[in-house]
Image 1: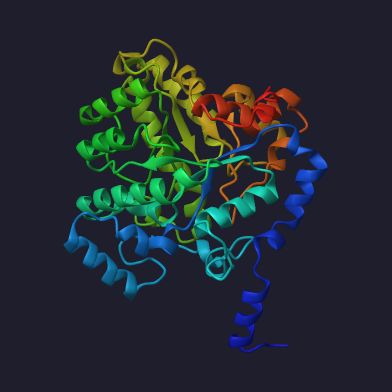
Image 2 (image 1 turned 135 degrees about the horizontal axis):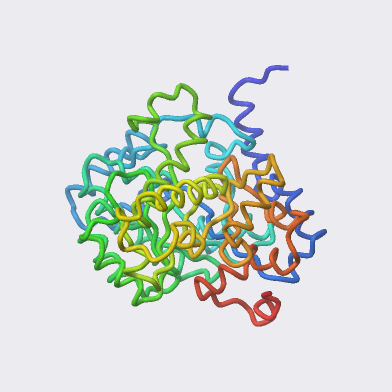
Length: 404
């Protein structure tokens, strides 16, 4: 029987509850005994657009703040200041994620983001989550660089003050306005030692070469601070190559690997790992299937044209094995290929679990825990131990004692 839209909305308000959506995840956590060891989610998300009015209060420029507030009123979803791209992320997939989330009740003294995030963390058995924005993943293609810089600083200030300092289970690799190299450097200077900041993140959908000399002072500062640099994948359907694709499934499959592959190629071939050997790099939300391809392809090219990469002292794949990767969205259609991939990247020490929750393609910890070819030690490292060591996370003593 068809229901009027008003009745459907009332039912949605009454029924939408994270604990109900993740009831099976909670059951999994109990059955697998996740309480026996720490689990760290290295890539989870919130919808900063739900708090955009708060964030815009942190904008220093009063003119830009007024323009942004006006734009937010005109477009409740995108808030008018962050490009959301063209796609169907909110209209397909396994879970209706964005529209109903706004209707979930989050009463109590804590900020709504803290309450909702802890709710899904508790269901999954997550001890610590590293939190990233969602619409702002497209901010790197904003036509006005000054807007990216202003919003990045406002968001980072808001996140630190309203969320990170108030909940020790939440951490973040803060957004870097990479289109402005000087502003990027100042961002690390300002927030590098702030409570809850465990690194910094570049959104990959952008068109600035990571090997440009203007970024070297930022890499040196990150290395001095002992903070990792992450490249968080995203897509841009307006990219000249991706614009040839006529279905979102194609854009999603290729876009989330394409930009990270370009940045990694420039990072390695131009010798950045040799210049900053102590700087840890994390490649986020690209899945894993592309990594063996790049290892083989670039090793083969390097052996034929090593003169074009004179800074390298070893094969490109060896530098890639020194880097860190997050699991999601992990390709699982061929277990043999996945096992080979994990061997090639030294997954036991270099791979870190990520859920990407609450996005439609999120992965539960069981994605790793149920893999038949991983040892118990490898599972615990990937689910938490590697992240604890990389980000120097502080967990309760009883949890740290169980890190493999």
